[in-house]
Amino acid sequence: MKSLFQKLTRSGDDQFITIVSGLPRSGTSMMMKMIDAGGIPPLTDELRAADEDNPKGYYEFERVKQMDKGDVAWVAEARGKAVKVISALLKHLPADEQYRVIFIRRNIDEILASQRKMLIHRGEDPDKQDDATMKVLFEKHVRGVEEWLAGRRNVRTLYVHYSDMLGDPRPQIERVNAFLGGKLDTQRMGEVVDPQLYRNRA
Image (cartoon, rainbow, N blue to C red):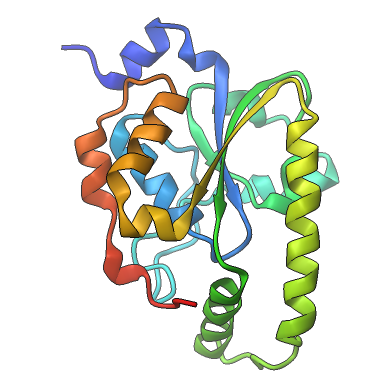
C-alpha cells in the first residue's frame, strides 16, 4: 500500500512547499506536528530539542534562520514537505517556488505572556522589553506580513487562529486539509491537538 506521501507526490502536489508561519510562540510547532501526523513530512534537522516551553518539539530547520543572509539553496528540498518559517523571514523565500502558507494568528497578549515565561525559564530578564511597546511592534509587523502575502502570486495563504484550533479543532483541521489538497489523515491530525498546552490565555 502506498504511503500518503507517495500519493501526494504521485498527484503532483509535491511541487508546492507548505510553510507554517506566525509570530514566535503563536502555535506554529503544534501546526507542524499536526501536518506531520496528517501525512506531509516536515523538513527539520531536530537540532533543537523539546523542553518545558515546547514539550512536543520545535520542528525547526536551522538553515531557515540564514535566509536573510542569502542561504536559500535548501528551499527546493522542501517541495512536498512542510517547513516552519518565522514571519519575519517569509519575505526571503525565493520567488521561483510555489508556496502554501498556513499563518497562525494568536492574541498578542498571550504571545507576550508565553515569551515572558520562556525568558524566565532560560534565566533571562523578562522585563528587558516593554510589553506595551512590543505589542504595537508585533501588530504592525503582522499587518505588514499580511500585506506582503496578499501581494505574492506564488503564495496562497490560510489563516488559522490558535484559540479556534484549541477550542474546536475539527473545523480548523478540515480547513487545513482542504487547503493542502484534501488528502491528509484528519483523524491523526486531531489526535495531536492538546488543549492542555493552551497555558497562556488572554
